[in-house]
Length: 364
Ligand code: M6R
Image (cartoon, rainbow, N blue to C red; front, side):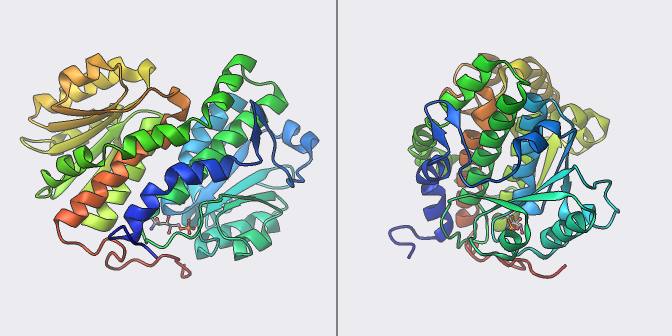
């Protein structure tokens, strides 16, 4: 039942603080991380020389965050790929390799086919899924569940947040096991995870402000989401959400790549949503925002509380509560979900059942 919310999507967006708590439950105690029930041999995890992630759509976007966090903390190469691509290119994996498949429903045909392909090649498969007993859960060697509860809206929101939280736990867990990152950093991240629930709640409390920003932009037909690093991955998800339910064309772009062609499409009045949650990249993002502003773009930034250099150059800014940069994706995606939701509502779209899409894609 969606009441008192008008749509399941909005209900599910609002469930995210709870979903974060559920996904962490039993897996984090103080700053210690454990995955009860996970039978993967620590020796195998210590000897991994690379890792693969595959998924579709929003789950793939969570995988992009997973890739960046694992590479950063575990210091092994991680390849994240779209399942419908991965399975058809005779992927280079075999015994001794680990493939992480991500699927909310656990029934997505391409993801399942990638899983089977990897198993046939002798790789170990770890599934991150939301549905107990789903095909992906049954066929993978190991499963980590995202405890997001049933997701009804076609546009995935809470499952994404749960997937990103789980990847963060996994990255910190593996880094501890392999002693591949400074212990203080790992402690800081583990200590910061439970607080994400309240931080997300604080962003949800600003729903009206975000609704107004979206409502004012409902006439857009074409927009860019830009960011660097983790912000680029979040931009991909923000653009997908907007396209999927509001039918506004949106393109996610790595901010540094704009000048290699795309800048030609930024003309007077073109809206650009600039993600800038990573202090180490603020200076570079500032110049990317200046680049689009010089072509007349209307820039809405999603940035940190102290990002004076970003706020100074953007037309408008949503400043997020303080959060560790490596944990920021969980928080930064929330205004983008609300933005997409309110843009779609303002355009009179059927938010929970967008045209041409199904919740679970069981065809290839
Ligand atoms: O159930 P899955 O996570 O495997 O689904 C994958 C995609 O079909 C799904 O994330 C899709 O992109 C969503 N509708 C996006 O909101």
